[in-house]
Length: 369
Image 1: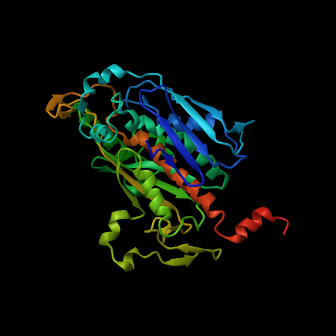
Image 2: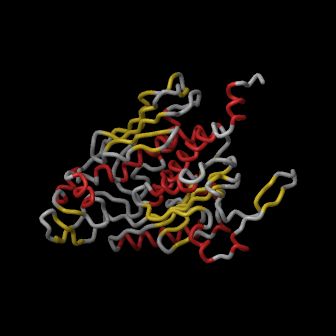
Image 3: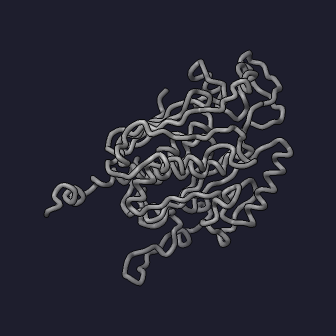
């Protein structure tokens, strides 16, 4: 299977299936000398693990990470970093009735057409547990960004028809909300809406916004390696994402140039700034020094408890119920997944940009000058 690798300099390959022995990732190209231990990675993984509250799957996984290589005496060594999370609470019997059926909204049929074989237990490689490798690698990328003062923060901005009011937004309270909404009123309304969906044995989708701050200007490779294009690809590669926006996103199609242009100004110290940030911190595919805003729209969880018509491998349609333990909404647990993909993209572009000017190389190799 191709397509399990990501990045150009800061590279990774994820591996593993939902009901296999474990999930993991191998990172290559991470600079040496970054302080890293299992607790650093575990903090990220704890935010995506199942069983956090009644709005997540009841699958009981600790998602405890093991660092197998690439770290010595608490520092990265510059060699490949291998991270492993063992699966502990598989209930493959829940999927026995799906061996010959293709679930609606899932990748079952395309996988079978492409490979002629599929792991039907929990979706195999297309399961949400695949994101463990992304998040573990994102934690390492986050440590690199931290060294440079760059922060990446994501939150839920919408669940179904419920949207946050950005004027009430308090990012310090994201983790206080059971649905990771930084608006208390919207969070309460979203919980009520979720309860309604669950009573109907249904699910819902939502939107995650991610803000990266203190990103230096100059990241991004023009034409095919644009920063916004790579961010969109990275976030779009998350299984349930169906749309990605940068800055004002699709709203720009309804605005005028005089409204959408970000005019320049200077602050009290004479530094150049943008008066607005409709572009989401990226112009011409290159970061401009403003906060980078990425927005991702997630579809509803396709595994619902209602009877559904499913195509069988026999070519006939059958009415069946999907058993097992599933999230009524993916979005709250996916917040850290979006953060991870944004962090990984920025880390890769930081290393790429280091060689974009000869002055940069001189600072590294001729520091005495």
